[in-house]
Length: 219
Length: 219
DNA sequence: ATATTTTGTTAGATCAGTCTAACAAAATTG
DNA sequence: CAATTTTGTTAGACTGATCTAACAAAATAT
Ligand SMILES: [Mn+2]
Ligand SMILES: [Mn+2]
Ligand SMILES: [Mn+2]
Ligand SMILES: [Mn+2]
View 1 (cartoon, each protein chain N blue to C red):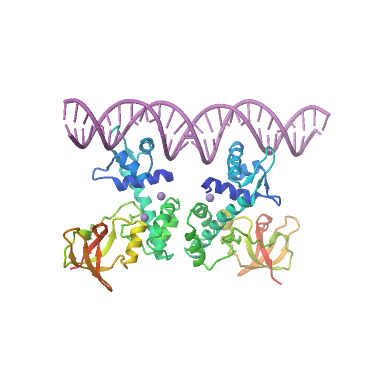
View 2 (cartoon, each protein chain N blue to C red):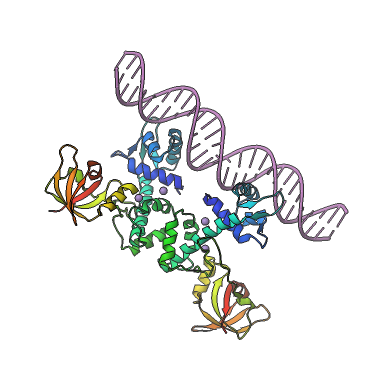
């Protein structure tokens, strides 16, 4: 069984992997906030468990087994976040840190019960998909708000970043998942975007913000 | 901050301590299921943190600081058990193992929210008191069913043992906290006790069982 | 194509938490 | 009280997860 540390490495590997399932040692070190030699030694451990393939000087390759372990931890993380928001009244900006700990609890029934109580949700409070109990993840492709054009009407569907600071920024503007936005115009100089929604008749979002917002086009 | 391991040692120390707050190294080793040298080395660590006093060949003495840390972990454990039973539909026999893990989560709001949602309960699903947020524990003294006499009417209030097997034994007989029992007779030979309750008109409980049941006398 | 930078490896150390083997002190028993 | 048993200590080793220092390979830039 994966240790807490191993589970955290596997999650990072899962998130960093490219189409070929490759991850560079140094990316992983940056992501995990540990030194290169620490990662070097950890990938050898993960290889012994069959969760990745390691060859000297090559990017590591996460195996299907490794991906499954990672997806099941991510499942526990996202179910927890959803439970905290929907059943315990937390704000979407408060739940990540708690879920980071709860995801390591070994108690299948605990998470099954959460899932049941929520009616088997498929996305978490930040719009990310919740992997199923087999570790399968259904990827939905959304548009980046930053790629939308003036005149379009879209619905906020997910975020590419869920840091507390960003979530608090969105709270401050009453922006939440499901909010419908009308794109009034886009500034050519800095790509900032002018939108209207709810009782906000004209709000400007910088590119730094709009590129982190994923939307669904409303026809 | 106490590590998970340290928290588990402190809980055991808290539970094993006598009136003078003393615990023998070997009791602790038995309780924690580790070797004597492991405990010997751990108590030196706990002393460095101010959680106990250690002198060679003497029982260790848990300090008020140590007791507080322990009580707050026990608080998280018991709040979790109560939440699992009252808010998530688990049976009282299923919750201990999960709580054993959840008690180590560092997220005050998570437990405050549980507490709030349940209306600030003072006992856990097994009748044990829940320490308050300052680590103060209100001890209620109950009678042992094994000390009761024929003719008395009592209410099941708590358990001195909460193993899954014992809880399943009680489930099998519809015995739960709050059940009112009439003591019909007591067998002098083996101290077994004959009781009636609910639709059970005569059920025999061995001393092994009755000594684990704590009751309140009904006048 | 060489120099420089970036990326990755090895060696060796540290800390937490555990163990066994050997021994010593304290408690119990006859 | 002496012998035996129980309890506690020390020494030394191991594993998991981390680090720094030194170095080597690969990638990039001049
Ligand atoms: Mn998260
Ligand atoms: Mn985590
Ligand atoms: Mn318990
Ligand atoms: Mn525990």
